[in-house]
Length: 92
Length: 526
Image (cartoon, rainbow over all chains, first blue to last red):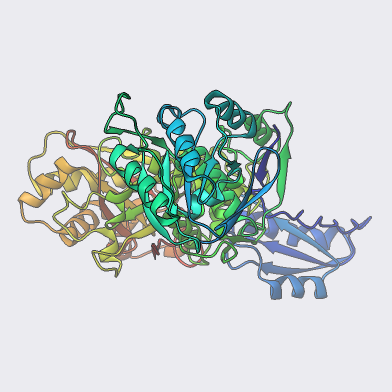
């Protein structure tokens, strides 16, 4: 006899997030997001130095309050409003 | 009794009460006492000559009932209590059971099993009530015993209890029903759909989930928490389903519910605990009277295998995060190495051999409260001292071993759980030390001059960055003594473990404070 069981999941497919189209080249304003993991700043400092030299870009620096939690909405909104692209230094 | 109607083997409906007194005789086909006694009921039926009814009520299926009727040549009407609703209504415990009812359905006599005197009395009263003259129920030449035990009513079978639970619980459960086909293995089904932690699970049938829900008074549709990483609502029902998967007993459910609530607070930050590349796993520490009631291990092999409550409560929490929250290794769970506690990590404190206030009392609860305390924990790590015979000696060992939690230059550490074994506890308490003395001593023996903690103090680049002290710091700055822990409150002390062995443990934490995960204690609502 077939066995009927109850679904242990939340019964919804998580929203498929559409990845934004990647810019062909970096121009305009680029956000550098530090998630505050060790040495992320070293990487981003170097990018902040090199990018304006090699490309026609202005960089803006952002920091998450903590890497342990998702970025707060206002921070995400700020980045979206002010920058055309974002480079995030993930993990150590 | 309430009126009822049941069908006989020919499908005819019989209603009770039927406007005259009646003897209702419950039986099942495979009961030897029913076999022995029903011929006497046929005799009673004949004697009553239609003025009062004898109605056989069978708990067996039609085929078996037909065989029973044929075996004894019964002429009295026999109906099928297919759903056992009438047996349930009269709270039947055994068969045969006789009930003498009047024309309005009031029960005047009842007899369970076969009790000769009671059967004689019922027969006499039935006959008297309709003025029937009938011969004695038992003849002198028959060797009829005084008494014979009956069999258990089918309503008391475990399988029927489960069926009944499902029947009565219909409509209570909201979750999607999933049918596992005949050709599919129920355990493999859960592996294949990614609903297991890697170990077999118990299939959550309606009966099992309803039985699990008997462990709480909370409504199945109550939302317990929003579970990260998807922040999906976990209802009491969803937690119960996952508790079934994990192998919990129903009485564990309140502990699992409290653990889910505590894990999903912003302070505990289950999202981060799950997502981190670090070793963190939710360690559940249970305090209060519920430990004994549920048999949660606080003694021998406390962190180890072998106790159902510890194993399944911890596992249930992680399955809720996995199945409801959507947190799976390699997806949002990015642990580099992880640790075995991510399957299950649940202990109780040994409050009985504890000369100090237990963890939950230190954290503001009453001794008689039962609580869960959640901690974002590494695996336990050995602290060995078999030779010290003084409090200072033992605690010095504990402290010096704890210096290297995470890294020997990671100081001002936010939170760790020190699990002291009973032998160490006795040595420490014998010198009159309390928890405050232990904490003070650990801070003392772990203290190092700031110079030793600098990133460039030795070959390892971890440590206090040079910029913190500047290029040419004063000697006084470099000599500042720094202790391992941010404060004495950072050292959480729990007593647990077997009676033999001078082995304690420290459980390191993860990123502490409001930027990471903080220890959270919740009361268990029973």
